[in-house]
Image 1 (cartoon, rainbow, N blue to C red):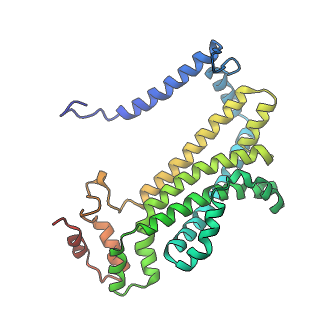
Image 2 (cartoon, one colour):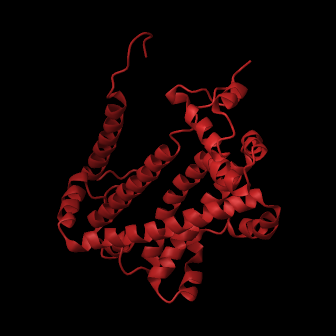
Length: 301
């Protein structure tokens, strides 16, 4: 980039679009000419064949039922994992008793892949639907719990001390300092969790599902319908992108009051405190903590 020149506003979108189009062009050429080197593309459908099959399936009720079933499982399992993961992670970080009771169990269970729990889910739950939701929950629960635990433990104690000095109790500290301050780390865990959830829900649908995008993709493979397999893969990618973007947008909205270098505020340490963040701490302490005082404490000397 030349100094003094303003970048074209659509440059990033143009680069991203060009990268996707280039990848599709390479795929089309390799599949069309049946390239067989070390990697074999002779059985691959072309982009045109896949797009044609995609368009055909968009007009069928079966396709939308599969999408609806997979999304329902993801939303149910991920929402449960988000709530319990944040609660357990916060408890472990804030309480030595919870850490002693839950920490060792968490560290033993965390390395087990969620998809390895499919036999357990089949034994535990009376229906495959409940078992798949459980697998989705298990996939997202551990990333959310661990990220929450680290985010809460990494908080600077100055805000908690300020609220307690002004008479704030344990719950006031939790809702006004701990959870807002740990939100960036928690949202990072949620972003990881939603991606892992898609991996596991698709795998679980392939193994024990009756409907869903994963189930349909596996059925297409068994009947050698390779364009259908690629339609399933494309659908999984689009749904994953959609849900990840939803989590990201929610995170930006929830953390819009936190210090951000992109918005002109200075990050810690030694930076100015964002006015809305200071105001929130002041409100959390029952109005006894003055925002200007807190800002002065963060001003560089």
